[in-house]
Length: 459
Ligand code: NAD
Image 1 (cartoon, rainbow, N blue to C red):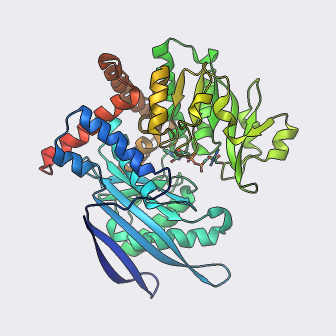
Image 2 (cartoon, protein in one colour):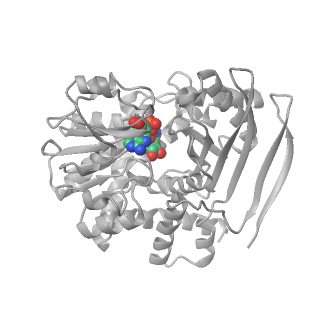
Image 3 (cartoon, protein in one colour):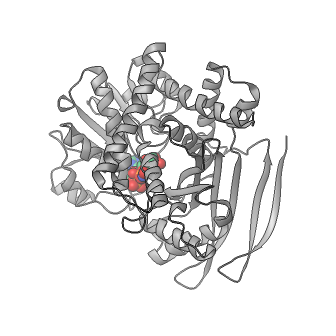
């Protein structure tokens, strides 16, 4: 059992400085967090279950349960007060058998390598389940944008790219926005990449602002994609959306657009929750006759935090952070973070809940999954439900390559087709073989990736 590292002293291209780089060239064992929840352990557990189920051979199993490559970087950033702070970042490329790696980059103070590993693995399954020719990657920087000026955030974006530029690229690995990063961050990263390479590569990063290589519809894509799958699930269960109500965890990009489309279908959201930075805890906001999306958007900061005072004055009940899960609703949409539905709180889910649409990545722990299965709750698994973002990122790349941009209706129409056919393939298999939706989605994804690895002669 050994981990091999290559250490390299590297001269930064942009800053006349020497930078310390660490490459993993071979990984037999990945160090794990010792914390009680470990996203990578969950991802591996889910994979192991499916590998057993489909009798995957041991070579392919060993290949797919760990990332193919990972980069650990530390880079200096000049802060506004003139000091230099060194930030830690990661890029993990889980598997690229189906095409160049694809996956977001998160800015989060509690980012860990195991979270990034898990998310990169989930990206592999996500691209595969919606049948797009991309692999799975993910990146992160340990930082808290709440306490950083925009200039400092720009320098972090540029610093991250300087360190990783040679290991990503339009035909290698393509980052995108994720938690606490947005189109502006992507544009700074693109600009740094193009400065380093001396050419225009709009396809090196997706989620760029519209007019700067971004695709119309990308902002809405993940939230809308969640609702396209929810719409199909409701159809399958014979329930009209207008007869349903929902509770949502989170009020960021994904949650807001999911609520928008769900409202358009006639559904009513009665509760949302978000993180309150000043209190260091989360809160739920409830209006039993339905929250108003526009009203709440008007009192929400750019991190998806709702102003409690203003919400109170608008007649919202302010409840504890986990109250969103306990509401008497038909649909739960976790759209914030991983590990939010666990065996310790799943018992609090109302008997009325029929569907859980996992908008966030990894919101349900494996033991809670078992309970949801027993209760017969229809689960739309994360890597299917939230695949709209990466699908639209793929459309963005296609448009970048053509240098021709589609109208928004065309993008959303194509997204609907992709999401709906992916959902139907998974639900058909689930019905035929009497499988839990997560297991059916995994079987389809893992089989496609394993087959690609075999065809390439990797396993
Ligand atoms: P975001 O940063 O825009 O919003 C996150 C929201 O979650 C905010 O409202 C925040 O206040 C809330 N939140 C954070 N911690 C919370 C807690 N403990 N309890 C309640 N609320 C909390 O992020 P986003 O882009 O909307 O992403 C949300 C989830 O969806 C993440 O799991 C992300 O990985 C996943 N996802 C995002 C995309 C995308 O395109 N943005 C694509 C696929 C998956």
